[in-house]
Length: 393
Image (cartoon, rainbow, N blue to C red):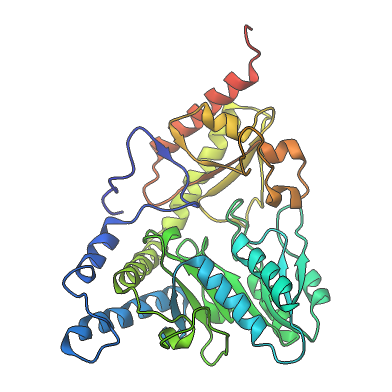
């Protein structure tokens, strides 16, 4: 584990790693030379461009190594949402056999859902939204039934950003390929947290987001199977295989490559097991302190190591966190003034309105410790007890 980032302040327990990760100090160090000394355009022909150009090559290889890909398949983008748009829109608009059909799921990331909505509105693309079961997983048989000869691409995220639930990606990809459709997975939450191999999963397109993996915001990557033809996300000078034009942000690409290299090391040295242990300890401590009130949202086994989504009966997530100012975490709801809307993800899983409003998303990461998780459990339990106790009692 590297030195603790300055932004992780001692007065807070940070449990919002799924929202964004602190930039690892080693990533900051790696990108610094490309903000100053090695400033040249990597596409230029003069000597000053050699180092930036080589840095891009190295970063592409580091990202490819993390997901078992060939470096040729890595396309730098402006973030995970840009990569999702390039994948889904790019595949749908290159479909040549009549109006395209796209399949996703009801609990997909908004970057994919909104791209599908725009494709339908602007281009007449038919969109099918697959249901999920009570654990939040897609049934491959449902996908098989939804596929048609016009299906251009299926887009199912590897891990849900709220619950951490992992989808059966290899089975889903196999079903898509059996009917001739491409398969895209948004792995923004999964990359670097669990082992991923694009060959073993047999995916055509895979999204990575830098700020979910200890790199800065505003940089991401899309794995594009070599030889695959997509409509570009941004038109221009032909950078990134012509799929994402614009002068490459070398410093940010170096940051993402370094983050991928560090994540690969973490995977080899037991970080997933450490986070699983902390996650389960946090869950158990909360269950002990709030007997009978803590309910897991998601799959008990098929989920990310550091993600715990729970509902505490009799509370509301936003109010609980507001009364626990030392905890930096998230709810499962989108808050608008004093009228939060329950999480569509939890509602799609069949949970009722009250359980969805009670949800807390507690996510751990590289600098989480046992002491912090124990402190968090106590603070959350104390706040819950205060909310559950009638005034004046």
